[in-house]
Image (cartoon, rainbow, N blue to C red):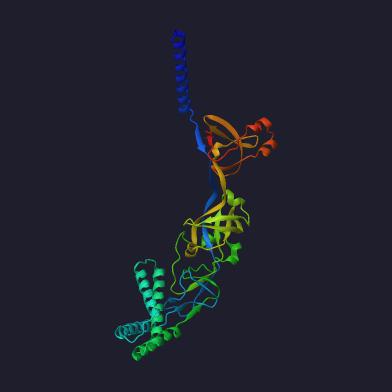
Length: 401
């Protein structure tokens, strides 16, 4: 190689080294962060302490000293006039012991009696009883255990009544007749309570059913709610003296807030309410009460999850709005003459791209590409439009420092 060629080669290597060193230096001293544009969601939310307001009617009788026997279980829907529960009578325990003793005698005679004709119905009932007994051994929820025990009692009664119709054994018939008389005594000697409105049954009664009503929403303020002295998240205890029926087609929650979104909220606005178990419900604002610069906002929900029945006061999230689209960090946006831009980075070449960014929260924005006709109205020339390529999913953009 000639001397001149060697010099050129050496200079080329030196130039490459200088470029690499300077690029590394710039990368270290002035790093460029990038972000890959993807479809996503953003929302604006506030955490609030919410009070449950329900259309509910407490059902209470006179003879509550001995406790109640639930006919309709917690969460069960009832119609007007349907029995909800009855109070135990003074002789309840004695009568039930008599029935249990008769059940044992009847079962003992059945095992010795071969005259009972084979019955698919009886076998089906016995199978159901066995399944319920097996289920109880695996249950931990009190209400579910009570429900299974009640089902077992009903199945036993059904089986015995069926046997009484088909058996020819007079001794069994006499015992079943005696048993039925005791069952009738339980019914006749008890005070039954019936539903005056349709809805779901609950035995969680906290005494606030007459204080937090849908009919007095205009009176509910921060001061009023604080005066109730309720602990957040506390589960309402089950009463052994009364029950209630709740209109589960609607319920309301009230919360006092002072955020920007709360101050801008208006009656009729639609929102989402996220409850503690991450379940979300549609809601709308039906009342706003102002007091000392704060707003107590009352939302109407179109459904009532079990969580809202079990509690009177909960921490919830108010989702004022949510939007889907191309999601980018707000730091990726620049603004010139009222127009937002992002800088696309492709193979090291950076290009400013105009975008619409009307929806933003504290950290992110949902952007939308301009149509060419819109850019033409903004003053773009034909040459500019010819080279325009709209921002798209998976484009890499620069995050500004």
